[in-house]
Image 1 (cartoon, rainbow, N blue to C red):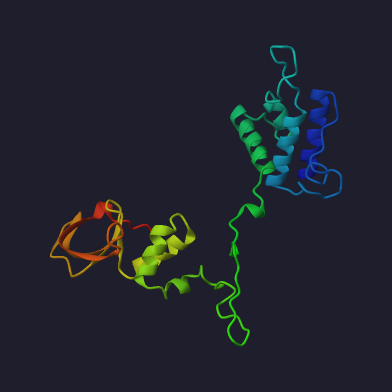
Image 2 (image 1 turned 30 degrees about the vertical axis):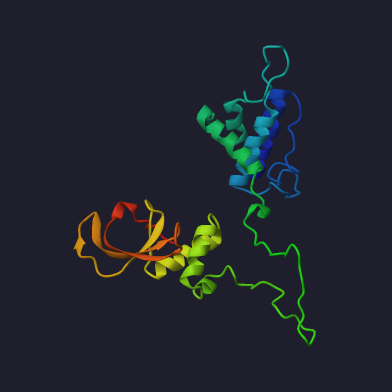
Length: 240
């Protein structure tokens, strides 16, 4: 249990370092002090807290210049006793516990996740009509990032979003909608192709026929290649 692990940590730290064991976030596993605070609980959190306490309470190895070194020389046998095990931990498992403790102390925050950004115009200008009402929309469309909005865009808009908003969520939605419209991305030519007719020749690694492709480089228009071999190795077929 977490209480037994906390008591073992305290006794091990006292016998090896000669000082009382440090408290972690209001007491190891919470139950040791009866407060039930932050790191408290059983299972993984109790193991992590016990490993952190052992690593912190272990004697610091002296450095070559005579100063106190780091606490990386913590005793695996002490860790095994602290965790209530009858056998000492192997160095590999002890290092794993230390890394687990370090990762637990650096958990990602909720603010690290992706946040929706609200558009704020740099130079807002309110254009009023003859009745004194706003002539144009003041607030951007709320669902402009929703997939249902991309179903309403025409091909030019989808191609523009794909090529000029690279690395964004909008580019992902544009690519997803283009695939729904039977367009396929060619990773060698970096453009989109669509069958103009059924392939005249098919093989395990390619197909040949007439294709429509979008020329984004020179004309920003759709062109036709009457005899084109589409090699499947250049087909981008990642699931959307």
